[in-house]
Amino acid sequence: MNLFDTARLAIGNIWASKMRTFLTMLGIIIGVSAVILIEGLGNGLQVYMEDAFDALGTSSIEVILMGRGSTRNADVEDMYQLLDENPQALESMTPTVTMSGVLKIGNETYSKTAVTGVSEDYLDIKSYEIEKGRNLQYMDMKDRKAVCLVGSYVDQTYFKGRSVGETLKVGKNKLTVVGVVAQEEEELREGGTDDIVLLPYTSAARYSMTGQISRYTFTATDPDHSDEAVDLIEARLYEIYGTESAYMIVSMAQLLDTFSSMLNVMITILAIIAGISLVVGGIGIMNIMLVSVTERTREIGIRKALGAKETVILSQFVTEAAVTSVIGGIFGIGFGILMCRVATKLVVQILQVKMSVIPDAQSIAMAVGVSAGIGILFGYLPAKKAANLNPIDALRYE
Image (cartoon, rainbow, N blue to C red; front, side, top):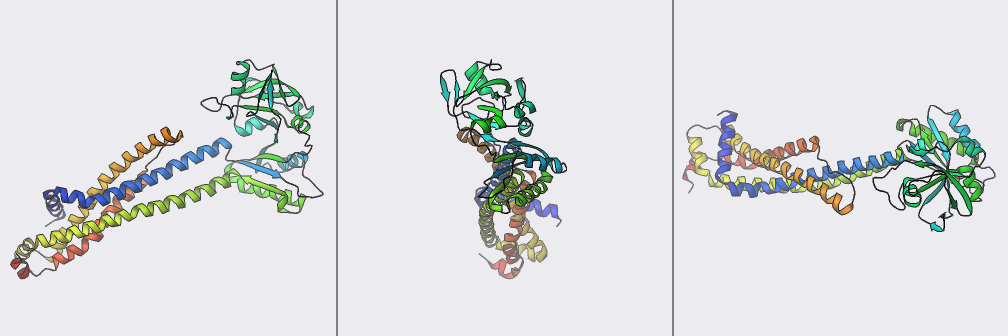
């Protein structure tokens, strides 16, 4: 009997007991679909996280200076010197000064608008564009000019789209709007990315009375050079302060790698837990195959009496178990893909997050392979029992 005949006979025996076969496959179906859903969630979260970091700038590096009583402090000139000396690893830099004063336009005050002092390179670092007017310029920094950029929310909501040339106040300081930053988010909202005011960092430092600028944003030439860039910044700051407690360096690329590793571990653990149901499904297949061997004892005896070899009987029952498991795996794949689509809609509607649950070909192929392997593994013991039956005892079985 060739493989085709064995498979045809196995499918015929499975089809003869459709309900029992379906209940047997249920554990495999649930296990495979659960694994595909979890892998899809992992893929979707990975893409969502990478998009979020791309928006922040995967190559960006945040530097926060605390000082901690050191007699020497790093200043803007030190940071620009570091940038100029390392063009192979560092591409750009901007000091940042967060203003605490509320925004005032006319007689209205707004506390949720982010007011930040930056350099002329800030828009390039953040991949922002100018929609109207001009960007901040070097002379604005040098002369501490009272000018600013506003986000699209401020422009549309407070100035009706005509903010360029108008004035606003940050605390008691009057600023002239010279440009509008192009809209970043799909919808304009209070407190969002587009609800911003950007002014020269030199002016912001004077207005906020801080004097010393304690926050900088660098960008590496590319994400592959982020580690080198961090090492260069850390070496220079340690040389200045003599202690690692005086500063903090946060690399977006390193954060992304850390979060990705944590996500992969979590998804792997969840997939293993979901895979337990595959083992349960395999036990169900073994149980049904043992019952099938008992029910077909006389059939086995007749076949052996007619000259069927043990390997033929063994391959028939192993094939039946494998086919049952593979069919369950195929149904599980279809159900898993359907669950991924449903999960995508639920995530969008309930969490208001644009994230797709993405099943990949690798997890689907693995699911098919695992389901077939489980069928063969758990089908071998009943098949071996059938192959070892004594034909005389089998023929006498009632």
